[in-house]
Image (tube, one colour):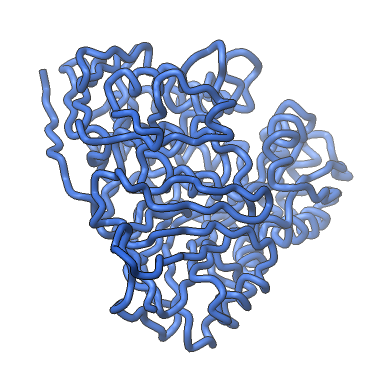
Length: 527
């Protein structure tokens, strides 16, 4: 048996995600001050330390297995924990609820040792049975969960004893430890139902949900029985819903909130000019994308998809949507913060070539189609409108339909011909590519319906990369896969964006995260 030991580590000080990998930088001249008057949880009679963080949307799904929005992942990050977590240094998976793990020589059995001092908010001690239940619930075909696609290789989870769990796989999956660090793989108590978790979340995380005011705010309080009390420096956290970017900025400058989770490009200059605000940029964090549903004509024609690529002035779209913060890309779904990212030449706008391709496909006068977007993700609507104007130069009429962000996922994706999304990246290769582009990928038909896209060469690369344990060799395979996706795929990705967060200058210990949601260990607020 090939063994990969991961010894139990103390909770790291930096925020969750890949901030350490991408070297967060201060955009404004402000720096945070060290706190000299904060109250740690359980610190006697001192006034509780309350941290106010602003989000543009409110969590609606509180069951981690079905969370799908950044604000929901933020909820999960505070309330729940996963078997593994991501290292800030190099994105390697590291311990969280599993202290160590090993992999069989054939890659089909992963064995996890569960820590023995984790407690659920309900008071129940964590055991291997809870882990088995959570994993089996995640992959149960009879009760599908939102992200089962990332765990299709898992056939069964088995409790060997109270602190040992085996995961049996149908095929090797080199990135499994990374997949288990995703927020939807959170561990819940054995027997928990979606209905129970929706009203009474029960995790082992550092914070307990104390109150949920729909559309307004979630109040979290420090969990008194959390195993690492020293890392909890905030007694109470408020996740406040403020939809308007201008209102977020005004509130931060006024000192009414402590953090803006995602700064809009339009508000950057205002916040940069404030002397009591610190800005942090995490590159390669997200992208705007237009999904082309190939079940609709003429999007099933590769020539039409290529024409839709060629009408893009990617630099202009980046400037319009993000004020120049974004970097033009070549329809690459693997972000630059991802260690498997490959640099691909960015195509230039070519209206005449787009017209030629449309004519070859039988659309010399272009065509008309709806494109869905939302104003709830900063810059996305602006990008969509600008793209529609570019497409019009080739005779393509795109009718922009504005919906809620939730509607894009529930009523748009796989149901409408074109949908513009805000998307955050995955920190591994397989999760970034296979669910969307493998012929039987869960977001590509799932084997039960015709896929958006099918390419034998790409399928072979994905399968080989999934079982390749050598990191460099796996990176080469994923680079080849990205070339195919950029050339022939169904997702238009004109640019990638950094994530810019803003804090009051009295906040210390916050380092941001390209993942778009944050741990708040060791964060302090000056009195």
